[in-house]
Length: 253
Length: 213
Figure (cartoon, rainbow over the protein chains, first blue to last red):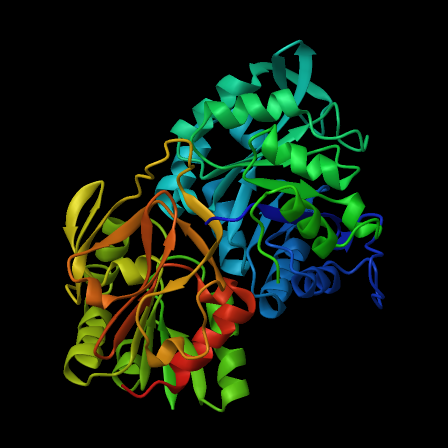
């Protein structure tokens, strides 16, 4: 049986983990490679690096980071932030990423998803959707870190990118991100039901029950969280034990 | 001892290279290189064929894009009987035929055809993406020490349907049986990514590197 994945996400700026990772005794809490190695050992199912600066100047830093991580961690790695073209995808895949995530560029031009999927396969193309509730049961895509409205309906956009060949959707609720109030479950459910590809729920995790709800109520194939793991509130093993107790299939290592 | 991971411009070989090199070091299995040179494949003691993307694109990249490399691969596996491991689409290429986009012939090493995954439960997502537990069907030296219930990392929308069930060494369940490992003679293939499958994957890689069929 396929297992529900737990994915810690590291926000990276200029090659450093933003706010650091403090769940184990890392020599350097800001080194993404050290954090990745620790999460690998802790039984995370995948890792996600998000380049939150993503300026042209620090692209090489990200490539170097991905390369070094791939040398030490034999687990799947998704990289996002500032990915604009199929050529960006190629460079990240060659550096050692397994999946590459489009965000604003896919909103501006959904065909970039099709071009990339045709060239590299759907299995490595993720589309990150940042959505905000605009009215009950209605969600709109926002770009530029949630600051810029687009007028695009999130559910329709999810269907569009799935049809263009995206292999997975990383869905972040901008209403919930950083609140620790739990996933936006109606949004997660609506997108998950609308597409036949896996959906990763993101944004708002504060408790282990939130992870469970993302799957049982939201219909997510994977759950992504940052702070509850980075700050040591819970370990990956605790999260998996809690989900297993709730009847969710997880890989316990 | 030389293990060559064949580079025919399909997908990311960095993590495969690092995983095989690490296990070669730990098991004293010699050198591991990534190469697109036919002469490297000709002198290889073991050959690994990875593959990401669509079956026809991989087939064309190998057979047409790298014709001399392709001939060296056939020579190494069919004539010299060197141990061979196909990974993901590299495993699928071992089949007689692939049916992704257009019907495309494979290497015809395994009696099977590659078709889109159609889970019996329509709510199951495709691609089949993530960790699934292996059910071992038949013993094999490369599976030594691997038990039913161990997890491997899968990412694929197509799978090999077997004509000859004795060539299926392991499967997993996803609204039906998904072929996970195939093998015959000096050839073995894994639908999942051993180089991404943490300790189970490293164990399989180490076994392959010491396999003497």
